[in-house]
Length: 149
View (cartoon, rainbow, N blue to C red):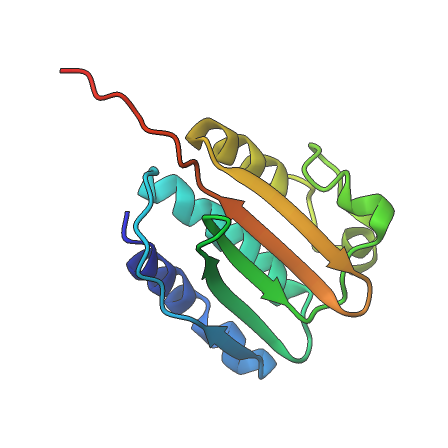
């Protein structure tokens, strides 16, 4: 999957929200291709970007590829996630304090992202600081796959 092409499609889908919220997109072009299911990876990225847009009211969203970690990184300058909530965000039905306050969360989006990522052999990792923002990393497997005829 050409990661740059896929990301540009997803970003285009959310372009009106960037404009409406007056958020800056810091996008570093990605030359990396990854072995994945393009449609499911798009679903994962859409959910992560949707959350970043939902919980970021000023500043920017930064999307880049960390070649050393073989990971796509989506960072925002949003409200952040409480430390005790970060450990539970991939649990089914868990919304955390931010989701309960905003009333916009179902607790299913990141749960489904985690399940899809696991099946694709990708790992999701989240770090966050309240009042400063959140960083989500999608780490792609570097294992060689055997191809059967």
